[in-house]
Length: 473
Ligand code: UDP
Image (cartoon, rainbow, N blue to C red):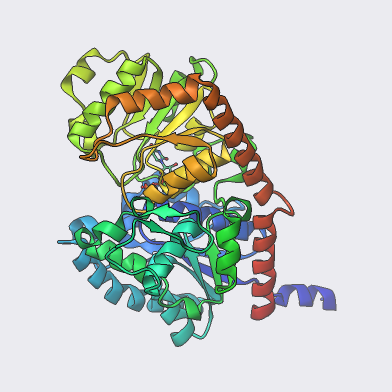
């Protein structure tokens, strides 16, 4: 063999183990990031829990581990509840306690197994929620480690301030000034900061995301520099931060050939054809797409107000109501609804919907993935946040990025039908709606630039891969 050939054969391909918290909104951006690493020649093993892989559709797993160039190896660790995951635990607190014990042990076993199969791991990229993976990577195996934050840097910075006790709880001020962020009213901070007592398990996970940050060789964030430049500049001074998002597939950004396999996992079956066929009949920009993501649900009363709001606004709407919430839809609505006017589905291919010309606005809970998707496709937004970071994301959508409006809640926290109707009118029909649409398009272009060749996120990924190659060679 020639020397060159021998050299090529011995070239080490860096192998990253990407560990995602078992939730759709966490795993999808990590899959997309993994694909971008594979495109740059890295080897990827994607890991989540046994119970999570069992809940995804078989179709998803097949598409992930197929033999195309985007091939991702899929492996599992245990959360201690292999049959059922969180749903099988008595409470989130107990689930967390078990997962935090069993997870590190099974991760360690997995890394050993991969090494003995001649597939050693060079770097663990772990979800911020699963920060203990850095103990395993760094202390036990002495390999590289990165934290991956699936939430915006604004929210990471707020939680970091809580972790450092720079922001004291319980909240006592009416307004907060946090570096890199606009002035935030207490009510615009993530909901866990005022109702943490109701969700001690989640709050604990969120606050502790930073306890291993000193061990991380990189901190990766699913956002892009142009969207959050001030807070990114501030955090870069204290963290080895790289913005690598939006982790939304580039083929969607280009509206090239779209296929349902292209994005992430789906925990629900979705009827793609019926949604798209329904949208195909509607005129450009006429449809309100309504979805509250994969976790949170509306109360029965709120579902009814929304039903009235949509009906009375007389617009076309595509409304996602998951199976578990279906019983909350009022009977009168189901009996009188004309499905040509308003289609209710249990789950939909959100990216295909948001890229469809018929969609004129997105009434959303402002989960970070949904927010980034709206940004990527330039879809004006009606923000109706429910909890956690959604509240702060809604503030940014309306007041910072100016790409949407926000519904008003009454003193009991109920969003009335009038407010929903007014927001729909404002986006679809008013002069201000045009301004908002233009801003949404501006952000769409900036998002696309950031992931295109030479853009801020593209460069950051290239730098990450180069440094990794250098450290592993
Ligand atoms: N999603 C989807 N179909 C639906 C509703 C949501 O594919 O009918 C996807 C959506 O595209 C997004 C994810 O589910 O990627 C929801 O994530 P997000 O962070 O917005 O909210 P969460 O589910 O974490 O509350």
